[in-house]
Image 1 (cartoon, rainbow, N blue to C red):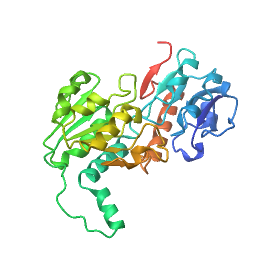
Image 2 (image 1 turned 180 degrees about the horizontal axis):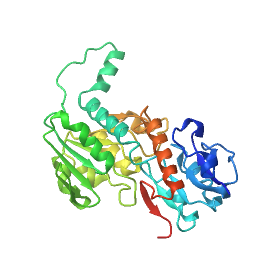
Image 3 (image 1 turned 135 degrees about the vertical axis):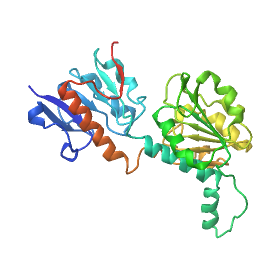
Image 4 (image 1 turned 90 degrees about the vertical axis):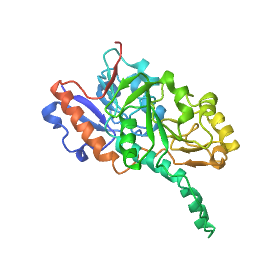
Length: 317
């Protein structure tokens, strides 16, 4: 008997996959197209197409009656959560921890430096042939607050280390100690915000973090502070952010927005002091080789009956 594995990449392009015949597997290529590659009822290991949205991610789940593993290619699992109720007990949901840390942290630092040092203003000046000199804020001697100190948050701090920040504070769901210093619980966030020159959001989207950066959060940020969001768009209350940006009190750099994609004509496009990138934190040349290594390793463990990495939850438990 063979087991179907749905992959969003051509299996011949993934080095290290268990040999299909020897492992009793049928590799099926599906990247979210309108037609399924085979009967979903035969799929035991489902790799969710990357960046195709919730509708695509959950479309086959209700018919996947033999499913044992759902593997995302993202750190967050919010796009598959609406389909979890379709799954039988015992299905393991794994995320892509280890795939996106470097790329997302790199972009977070890019957004911080570009915003502080006035790069968008320089680009516009070049376009208009204007020499826009002057003094601009530096990252050196600034206080940074990382909200969401998981693997991505830690990778962001790795890249902040050479920039001589005055201090870096860390916030996660619960308190813990690290080699770099304490991680504060989410409950202490209100007292930490007023001291931060730069606030970086790298938290997953959950019911606890949806709208986290709302009116009260933003009001507690110091005048002139920069908000950077490389988490998920709904972590920030867009209406509240627009009010603060329009006042000129804070600035923002956003790799994710709510709504997303940001539609033409939305006021966030032209709000003062905002830099927007189109959700490309993980979409870099670093993604594909790391994603393929993850899939090869996970399927090797699956075939051997070994515990899977990056287990987020098991249904029914």
